[in-house]
Image (cartoon, rainbow over all chains, first blue to last red; front, side, top):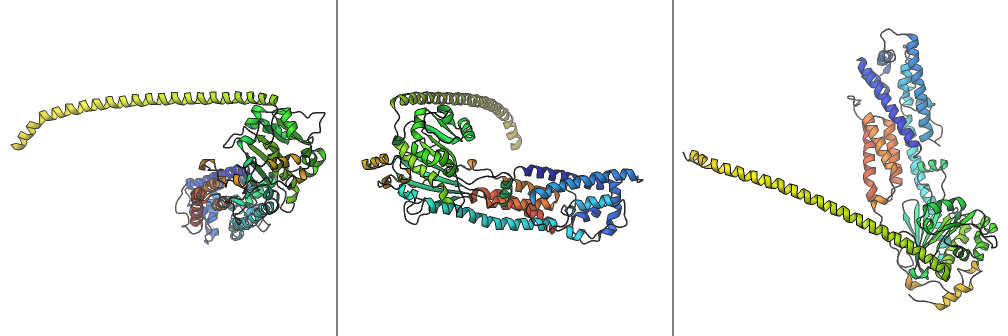
Length: 464
Length: 121
């Protein structure tokens, strides 16, 4: 909605300003305001008796009416109302069955304007008929939208839950991939009836697993479309989004060598290389080697060295998922892989897998992608760099660490200086205060002395 | 941390047989290394901004100020959206309640209130 809302808002502001203008105009002319109120309020007073005189005066500002002059504002008025209405209908009431009366009726402002502009031509017939059905269109539209919103909330919520549950049933139930790889599944502490999924909001589901060699834990986050939200749903018709799942594997500190590696579609890889800090620092986009079997053409590999990339993209992976043929069939759901021992955040050594979730019925389509997760945990867990590459990566990391330390030191120094300056300021202020206080004290003393001088007389006066 | 040399061998042997890698004989599981899930603490500043609630408040205020019922209705709709997207009740309830109050006030004064006693604008 972020695109339309400013539009809507501005229209509303213009309308309200216009409204205020009309009101103040009538006020200025000195006519009774009640007359044009009837057009807004749904009171049952017969408007025919009251309306025509003031409305005529509204459009004809000069005392003697001039036909071409009155024609001009009329056309201007009608055009503005129609354009505003177009915006209104498109934005808010999409997908509502066409049960409402013709367009000019939906806007509560239009009766006023149309009657105003129409009255100079035939002031004797101010048709009151379209008014009674017209006044409830806003309520009907908004009410039905609210009802649809509520219905959609429950159906969309169930839809999202179904997707998450079918994912859990496919991959985290008994005899499934995660059950065979992790000893602890779900958020609880290992009992049989602990829930597998943690629900955060209506669109986010989390799945946690732990108890496996090489890694501390795995957190899978399912980010689903906001199906429960009708407005977001309408917005997603314009800007489509996908259901995504991301796996974060927190590796043991001793189980991961110096590895910075990422794999994504070409465009996304470029963006990742720009945005993600550790990729930017340590890694480069690799050109595909000519001699070896490599990943599909759509994919790009970002890695610290060719050696790492060649060791992580094994023949098995190419055959199963990332090769030209297999990628068409099984790898479509890949968004990105990102393995790094220099991750920013709480855990440093993290494997990140991002996939697109298939629909609830076709959950098995992503089996091979999910199988990548334990495969890479094992592969990276036992992976050791050659000594050459290792020395290279070590120097790179040292450099970065030094830079980081320098930055830290600079920041500390800055903080120190700031603190010093603050203290100085405080001292000065305190001194100023002190001096002010001293002056005040002096003054007080002086006053006291003077008082003392004056006191005896007082006493005498009192005594006398 | 318990360490299984057999498990290591198992991993090595599965190279090239990916389809079996999750069902090979050696168990990669290590119950002793299992750690229960600890939810990361998220400060309230990091939560996504509740745009719907904000828009609802604006529409509600406009609806009350200008006695404009469509605005109040829109505020009500955005309130519904805000409630639907609410993640944790304590944090977001304030804004939603404010927007709801405004929109309800606008509607009540619009439908049941006195027929426009004076000019506000």
